[in-house]
Image 1 (cartoon, rainbow, N blue to C red):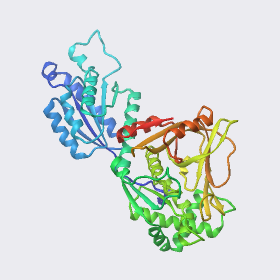
Image 2: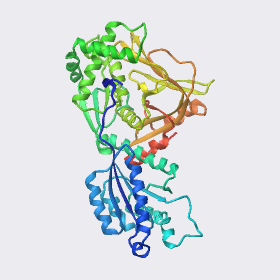
Image 3: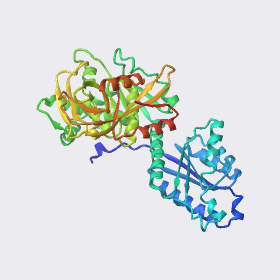
Image 4: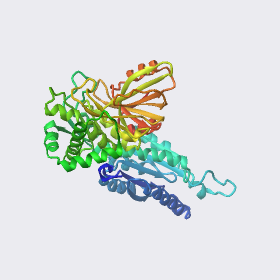
Length: 473
């Protein structure tokens, strides 16, 4: 992969880890603590293998040690805090950690093996299998303390349990990305799209992220500074990635490449994690040409994990960032038509697209007009890869609160339009008209992110860590 398509590096997800058990047992059963500490080492090793910075504060045996662990974890600023209950412990030992760490908490209790050997086990051996005992106690205390309770119960080397734990770590990746993200917003709202309008205060207050308000002037000056050699280099890169349709005019291709280089500089200068933009323009003036020349560069940015989306769709770029961080791609999408013979919803969008979801080498098509917009130039076209997909939108409700809205379906083969759009035929296993009614009633806007795989459970877990609702259609 060329450096020009290298994925954006973000701060690593921070996970805090603490294990514990009731210290009263240790002098009573001398073999118990070493066994539990060995289990704790295995858990720490599994977390160390994950794509995260893990702070392991060790093993606690009483409330005082729990308070000390809480102070260490508070300074780390975790994205997820994991409490490994190795045997029974009192809830007073873990409450300070959950209260002071300032992070969502996951409780895990993993007994040593699938089952006890009842014929040979005594009390000390049984206590190593007693981690489930305090889980309801901790759940009750968390509810009374206003702390959301999450848990994974299983045995130490049970891969299905580790898959469930991995889902929460994946959710922590999304939380980390959204709480540290810098979202660029350039231009103005597409006139009349009231569902797209977003209170800019909501992102920093909900997630902790930042919205950088930009002008098309910021892009214009960077595009004007691009050299001929840089344009040629970007065109060469595009030829390797895209098939150029015969409709592409050389001057439009060169302009798209020039804008692409300017976009990269804009993103670098403002340290952006996403960009939403729109400018209407008039009579071919420069800002109109800039807005029309964005698609090539925005698609390359999106492929690098920096969603760049038209129509001023800030909330959808947030959803795309979430699906991108989950490793599922995420392409800008809306409903295009329904096919009641094949029972599919045809969806896609013109403009920037995530190349990772393409079923084939993407095409650059020349367009003399962008429907519903001013300007002309090159557009990206491809079909979405057949197989399971999940839609993720970011809804805003009457009280102003944000929510994740998800739906799972399957992309199936069939005829598609060749009009410079990303397109797909999605089968939701039901009458497409009824699906549209339910999807529209969910509170989602008319744009969303289309991501690969059935991932509604992943997005629901991320919403839990982010402290927002998740609705599935």
